[in-house]
Amino acid sequence: NECSNLTNIVIPETVTSIGDWAFYRCSNLTSVVIPEGVTSIGDDAFSECSNLTNIVIPETVTSIGNSAFNECSKLTSVVFRSVEPPEIGENVFGGAWDSPEFCVYVPAGSLEAYESVDASLWQMYLVRAGKIKEM
Image (cartoon, rainbow, N blue to C red):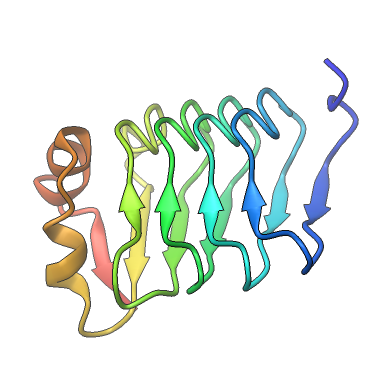
C-alpha cells in the first residue's frame, strides 16, 4: 500500500473535498487535520485507518460518505464543530463504535439535531448506546 509510511497529515487549506477512498488503508495514520473549508468527506475516505485515534470534523463539512471512517478500530473521539449535522452516510464509524471509549462530541445545543440523524447504524450504535455528548 502506497500510504503505509504516512503517520500524520495536515490537509492543505485549499482542499474543499476529500475524495472517495482517499486515505483508504493508511493503517499507520495516527492523526489527520481537516481544515475549515472542506465541505465533503467521501465514501470510505479514511476506511481501515486502523491507528487513527481521534478526528475533528470542521464546521464547513456538509456531507460525510458511507463508511468514511469504517474499521478505524482505535478511533475513540470524534468532534463535530457544526451546530447543524452534516448529511451522514451509513456505517460512518463502523468497527469504531463498538469500543467502550468511543464517543461523538457535538456543539452545545445541537444534541437533539445529531440524535435525529437518519441513518440506521447511527441510531443503533450511537443514539441508543448514548455515545453522543455535548461539548
